[in-house]
Image 1 (cartoon, one colour):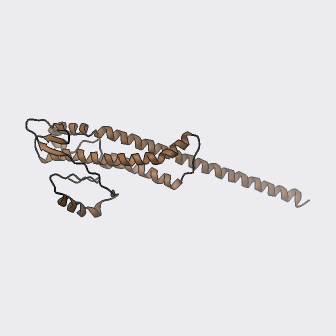
Image 2 (tube, rainbow, N blue to C red; image 1 turned 90 degrees about the vertical axis):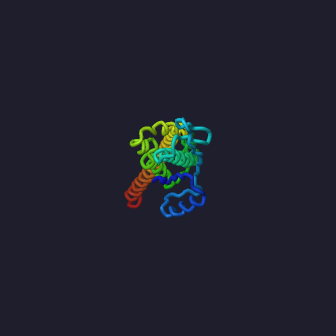
Length: 218
């Protein structure tokens, strides 16, 4: 099952078949990761059980297409969240010196274009999580198969989808505010520098005028 946000779930597929399918999609993948994030779990039938989740195994009552769709949806969201968790962690590390500088009352030398690029990355990640992936939305298959609500809820809890999403979103908001604050400070510093240039030019013009009036024509 292929999802538009770049996740693919395979069921009972050999490594050769998996590699061949991924090669076919190669030209259609945007923002491709250097190393794909993979999560594997065993899916088994269980008699007289109600979607029991054990260590490394999900027991479901049938292998119907709607049930597999629910499992695929949750697994794909878990993998995508892992990707965002890694990106957010790296962003926190790179922004720590900047935040430390702001906390100590000093503004270190910052690349303005780099700040804008980072802010754009944060906004793109937020748009992708909320808009394209819609992690907090229920899968469409549940509208036609409400009996799978329990399976979806159990899987969501097992993989901590909502909690992880809220944590990533909170960190993205914090990163965005930090970058925006730094951008505002850089712009303020540039504006102050321009104002000083204007003041110096005015003083120079006044000096030249006084020189022309009192000294050169003396």
